Length: 575
Image (cartoon, rainbow, N blue to C red; front, side):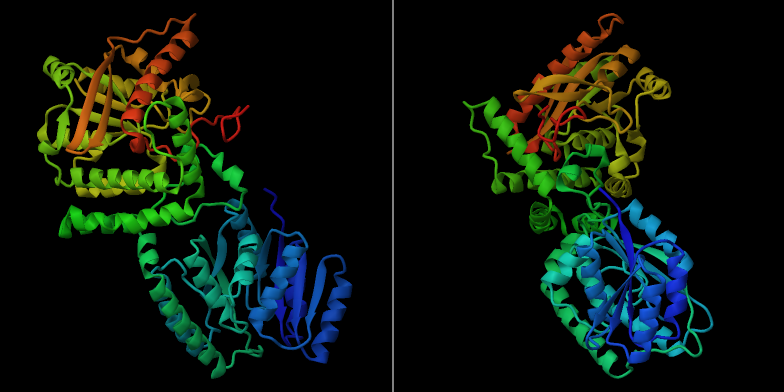
């Protein structure tokens, strides 16, 4: 996506300061949109001279009457959007803001084009104490209206907007046009799950500066705006509470939908806040699983409404499942199946938390056939166990830790799930000891794993994910009727370790969790000359077993991205 920024400067009768402000900003080479909000004739003459001096860089817009700072800013944003710019840096005309910080705002927006970049004022002794203390009252109200401390300062006029997002908002919601504009637009952005990033910036007040803040009427307008926003917060309260346990649109960049959907799974930001997950953990501890599980329904409903890419991936999965097994009853793609799919995922995460918290007993989990597992444990040998994002692998790790039946260590790619893992770790101190985080399968990783296998541990790894740094090390196998990329890592690792390999799946069924533990290979050999063929054969064997269990529990395969996509194919698996 292109990144084309500009600067928007609202002005009303700041004829003494505007020349210096424009001069300092022009040094950065960005296009300037100066919006004259019905200024007097003397200011108009100064602006006309500036427009002539900076011809080609400065665009002068004139509003016929004074409509307020909000009206001027919105006019400038719309004009910038219409002119083809993607981002606009708003800055006041009175020279209070440090123009040398412009590159920092631009760099932050380039790094995260979908975020609103906010200035966080750093005041010197020139700030009037009444203005300084008065701002904190507004800050508190904003924190109440958003149920968050994300917006540290909602009144600073030095900020950068993604134009697509801001114009969509100002065209769909009636926003105030005076000084309360800066406050309300941020609260409404927060309600829409837009990300915020703050940059400390120096703010100075000139002794002879002109302020258009009306102590009486602007405070009345701001109070009226806060009243409206508080009622808006109360109406949105269920969703705002759900947001605490759900993702921020934080790292969503201003890319096309197709670009977002084609991201690899590990590039997708973890959805959920640490605070929200911790609240669910606390609720589980205080009020029990049944009561806390009720919260999952509004949370999943929010995910369903906002997760377009996840809905599309779920529909794609169920479509392929039905085509691959036309004689079987499979879920029909659609909103209902997507809801049940996401709900099963949420319940799985909830059960992981309950298991590590000691709220799941051995009676809730049973082996379909325990003979292979019991023989392996009795032998004292280590092994590599290949699982999947199907059902709930975490349940077995927790139970193994509680009962000390076997030394089970999960090999995980946790770059995208640190928040949830930290919550599990807080639920049980044993969690971290049974977790081995990797980003690839290099020699150092293999040596570390060899030591664990030699000590008789069971290393559990998933076969339906690719580590972040191994995107090219895949082999294709037929899965649900189409070729899909499967990781080579598990089979390369098994070859290096020279240990027995088992498959493991843990499915939630009506009477609890059922464990399926089956032999896969006594040893995996990868002859150098036939390495590719052997890798493909092992991947295909794994894919066939994964497909078998997907048919057995269709809602429990949790791949909310296009599993069939690869760098060589489009988002729907087409070449």
